[in-house]
Amino acid sequence: MPILIAPSRPQDFAAPQTTLAENLEITARRYPASAAIHFLGTTISYAEVLRQVRALAGWMHKAGITHGDRVAIYMQNSPQWVIAFYAVQRLGAVVVPVSPQNREGELIHYLSDSGARLLVCGGELLPTAEAAARALGGLRLLVASYADYLPQESFVPLPGWLTARHPAGGQAVWAEAMEADHAPPPYTGTPDDLCALPYTSGSTGKPKACMHTHRSLGHTAAGLTYWHGILPGDVSLGVAPMYHVSGLCHAVTSPVFAGAAIAIVPRWDRALVIEVMERYRVTHASLAPTAVIDLMGIPGLEERDLSALRRMTSGGATMPEAVWQRLRDMLGISFLEAYGMTETAATTHLNPPEAPRLRCLGVPFFGTEALIVDADTLVPLRDGEVGEILLRGPQMFQGYWNRPEATAEAFVEVDGKPFFRSGDIGYADADGYFYMTDRAKRMINASGLKVWPNEVESILYRHPAVLEACVVGVADTYRGETVKALVVLRPGAALDEAGLIAWAREQMAAYKYPRLVEFVESLPKSPAGKILWRELQDREAAKVTS
Image 1: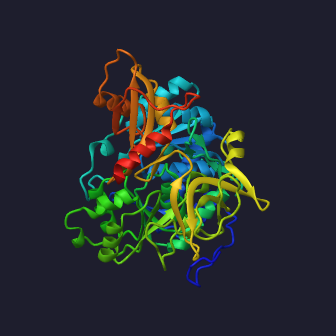
Image 2: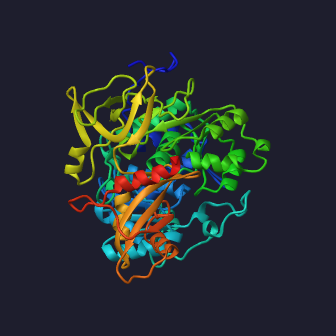
Image 3: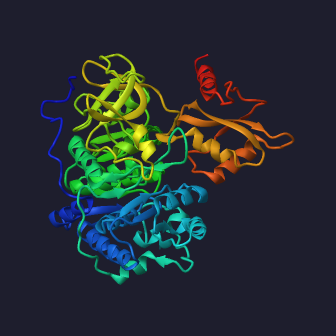
């Protein structure tokens, strides 16, 4: 299948034989005085980041963390997030990235399932972290205050939660760990070592961890650097959540591989983002389409200086044509849509900068094979024919942590080679561009984040008034899709929409909880008693087209 990429762009490159920890060491030796991190008025050089990584790795080692142990990171985007990530890599241990939006029950699952021995958390999240630690027992906490890395006066007003210094409650404190300045043990890592367990959900069951090695994450780090032309001294925007595999690759691993700086924004705030982009002359930004839409709505945006920006990209959702065109007209750049998932280290397809297309997944990433097959027979289809997207490449995960059956189900063999079943339905054209038309798996795409209805339903069933629940995705002009729950109440129960939404908001991450609730007398079922979720999903889709 031909791929329309400029002749100067190869379809593959020699695989780096370094680990993520070694990438930082090499970059710090090459560019010791160059900025590694910009944080709202504070700039930290690569030499200093490496020093702090070594000191934290030494403290973790003293705390009993060794090669292969799991360490969870539960905080907002921050210098501490980046430093903690590389400190864990320096020990040959494994990072478990956890969303700061997760509530106690969700956090307990990630910690217990991964077997994490240490949790590095932001001070504002300490009550939830301590509750999880009490439930599990034997888990050590390290508490960080973002204020430790902020200047006395920032160039922009900052929210109180960011500048506050929260009491550590007797737990180990980040600043004291750094002051101890312990030396780490000799480094013994290899590219094939496990290095991260980012979690994904699925059509059934609780979230499961994807096993990624230095080699798989390193391929994406190098590939994004080459594809987007990230140069030493460039500045990548670090606002995409670092716990999410896309933010991890765009704002943690690829800038360090390239020798670029990371301009960190703790979480999305368009006024803060535009100030950071201007002040630090951001060259590369990975933003979900919803974030771009929000950014483009800033009054007087045309007067802001974004002249340094050379690339804007993201996957997970399509960009509305009007916003795509306005971006081109205003900044002279095209938004490059991409495609990937947690299992594939964020990227399997990307639009070539030389010839991007709208509402298109792009062409296969470096070293990536992609097939369109009949979902039942696995027979490869011709250009233009619609089928399931299968994937293989060096960025592929090694399977689901402690889930051999789920791993086996995720892969199929075609022409003697293993391919990952994406669960997405689409086609490829004669030029090698891929397009998605539907999903085989039951999933909702809310602002580029995956929401798995089965997981939301399992939480809703905990409410004493809920007899039955079915979660579907509904069209949303801003989020792309949003979450709706159809609920049958128990006889005699009294519950309104606002009450259930408020309860759900306390039980699950903000992007997951239902924004809409409809109470119904009954839900359609199969003869075997299974709720016919597809029928309900189709009803919602019909409302949009009618």
